[in-house]
Length: 292
Image 1 (spheres, one colour):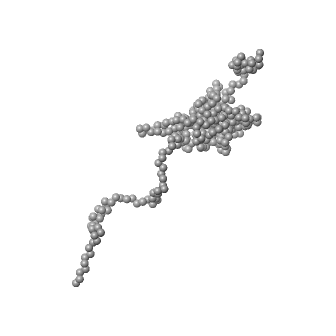
Image 2 (tube, one colour):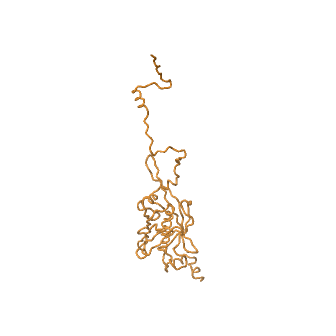
Image 3 (cartoon, helix red, strand yellow):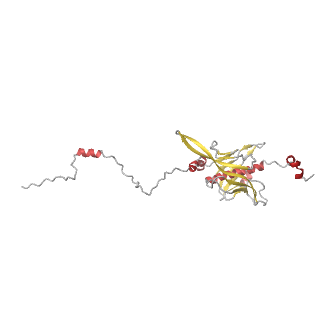
């Protein structure tokens, strides 16, 4: 009887394990989660920017910008400060002089830039200012009395060569000296609707150059002694670009100033004439009435 030779395990094969050893070996392996169904393998072309945002981009995250995205602000012009009704302690703009009472020949407009910084785990609201515009009275051959604006920062934040003039050309006999109707060509115009002219003379509308209503201005009121009783307001009706918003606020301040000059102008009276004569050289005789 021939016996078959017994097969020997290959030298390259691992030795047999019993069941207990196999279970222990499996248990010692680290647990791996299956890949997500939607997971995609990383690509060499995928680039994730780790650059921090620019300072000005961070600085622009201020209460004003939050208002423009979350709610439309109603602005108050309180002497030199302009702030939103909802945040009176965080002014948005500051003027060099109060347009409601000051007869200064020129004004500067600055914007508050707020930045949230952390110190020892506590947040602090820091601020700085950006000088946007200067404006002053000018003369135009077409429109006569105008307001001229000079940008004081780069074109990212302010427009160049802005002029605010009354709504009608010089010499057409319409409009007089009133600044209730005025415009900055290519940007905004202020005017009263027919309904407002008949019902509420203290309200006017600001529209963009396409005719869209962007804000409603409520004029100031004064007490008998000329002091401001109710400060002027500007209620935004639509969200607009930050740069346009800054220009709109600046134009509003200039319009309030020009209207104030008309409202508080001293009427021509004999007492005023005598005061002017006294201030003139030689009592004013040569200036007004010729030589003696």
